Image (cartoon, rainbow, N blue to C red; front, side):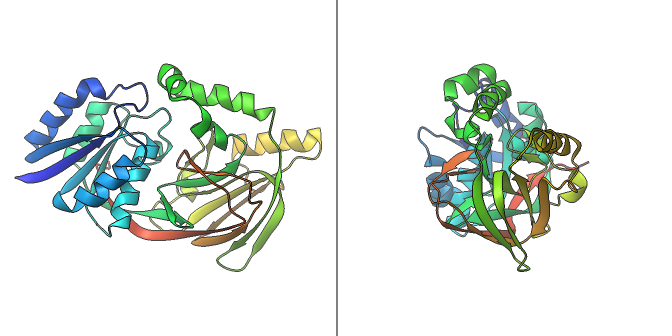
Length: 297
């Protein structure tokens, strides 16, 4: 019998996965897995568990939000383990899960892992820290880690949108310089930026799925310039809404790595979690670094 470890964040989302744990275990038992469960109780605990125990199992299953999934892949990467991962999204937004087209139903997600096959996916390295799908700054990115867990649990994704609208009145631009892998430089005043491997960006913006391959060794670098007039502001909103990447307000390029010169006091968000700012940031794509169990039509 194969061995499976569930790493579960019982506080994720509206705690909706908690009531289904017994049934989840039953699904994996029927798929010939002997199941162990670890409930996390503190930030970064999933990282430590994945690193220390990940090599003892045939499969790890993460139940939680994108932040919990980030911790699991970070632990595996730190311990140089290639243990396959299944993901049952139970957070408030689940950007990464949406990009993978994972089932929104908890039990359907468990069944898709039991019936799935291994698929390689890229992850990212932001200085010394891993991220599964996005590193971002600026408008709306503070919302994901600053919104209280109690509000997330009560309102779910709506909590992010409400907090994002409140934050919009305080948006300011920052001057940054990005040097892509090919040497091309992008320097300007930006209100938002993301280095992503996802079609869903910051829970609010969506990239054209035709442009995003989650295992091509490339990131999508999206930058939004500071609007200087009401007309530019209107053009900016319209371009984001219609995915008009030819707009002069937007920059969208693909690159395997990028060097960033930024204000040291400007903080970042990695997979929805806080990351302290730095005057120089190095972001690298780790090609095919993670094996996920996915059921794809």
